[in-house]
Image (spheres, rainbow, N blue to C red):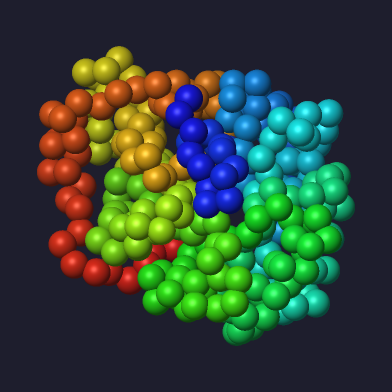
Length: 277
């Protein structure tokens, strides 16, 4: 699988694993843990979670999945904007570490922008890095204007990534945010890369999938992974779904495929407000 490098030199697989909606039902926990472990075995060693997901339940699932193989995993979590004050960020991170059963988070993100000044959150990130509790930091759901503010702050050049909604039906970032990040060597993390399944009945996807002997979800995921500056974090709660996602990383789409997908899901022609779920 191809890898993507963050500005600090850390290299991760282009295809990771998301945990949104995990940890919400005890009856699914064993399957979710098994799915994450299987993904790690298949090389999908980046695991993305957040304190918001299932009120910390997803972090607990991730923590169980990485027990015994922590050093093989690149762990990402997020702080809620309501907790993103200087003291609140530190306390939130410590609570996440406890749920995850680890002593450090490899990449810690501000989940979206709230009322706390960005400078205060960055100060907290620096405190956490100095203490060894996080290895790097970034943001999520921030558009170009806020990214400009981030890099204009003291220490803002250390921002590792922007995690945003990106898939065939949500291509707005291609007009401005993606080029902005690409210019600075900052990869994009794409969440909901198959639009939570809502685009999978599109006839264009079905046609291309049939041509490749693949599923529509694999085509949609392979499309996101086409860009060397974008990594994807689909969620899969079952081993079979994990295997399907992993196989998508090996698909090579043709110029004809891209032409048909552009016709079915047109790229943006002007700047658009950043979308989020």
